[in-house]
Image (tube, rainbow, N blue to C red; front, side, top):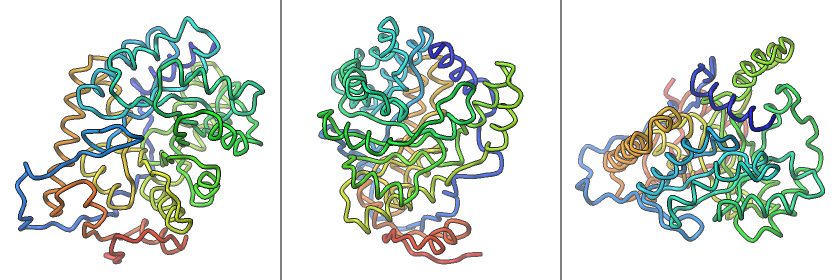
Length: 369
């Protein structure tokens, strides 16, 4: 049943309009200040960075999407080959189905099989932390793909609107702390389209996580995915509830600022990964200007992945090239320098920062309305 649901999720994301309807990422509220005389050649600009001891050609991760069904193997193979070609990080989808049924392992393992050099992130759900075998589950997930890190995904909204979804979340933080202490690889905690607040980021920092992937609202809505899932399962009541929550969550730009503010106030050392509606190199640059260390891209790579790794690689190359151009136009020699780039924040993002009392530093907050 889990395996079939994974395939249904994949097909819904491929074939249906599951993006936010009324909510945006609010990255458009960040205006980068153009430098007409950057005193740089494009060849001078470096997008290289490091994460968890591995060199990346750019601060990019192919965010968790799929696995757990035989049909997903080809998709993950395309994503993994593109990640290897571009030297970017990749996270597999939730591994629950394969942990429970070893016959499905190769749909995930194929990501590591294409290269032993790329940074691969394993993936388990928060709900699995509440079982007695949580530590064993985490170890199996990491071993399955010889992972360099483990992501634990938080998806309370998705579970609550999903037919037969989990509704118990009490004890998740304790479970995260336990895995952090026992797993032996860095732990990333990520949302799945609803964002992470500074309060949650602070709790995760105390738990010792190595990175937080915000996965904010404005991109793919998993409430939307579950709306279609419920309709296909003949569950009209769940479909209507899921539709009500279609646009629920903290927009991506706001969530980046929430996590960065928590890190600044706590003097934390965790990485911040921006995701949720990241579509091009400018979005990546704006995320880094706001304080993120890396950006995750998911659905824009999904349709290319069905065609093959070359299409995925071409999309990633375009994003990296756009990021490089943006660096030059901001007068930045490297992606690390984007933290000092001139920018102006306006609109809803500025209001959010002020009303939430966020400390993000780095950028100039000016109301342009």
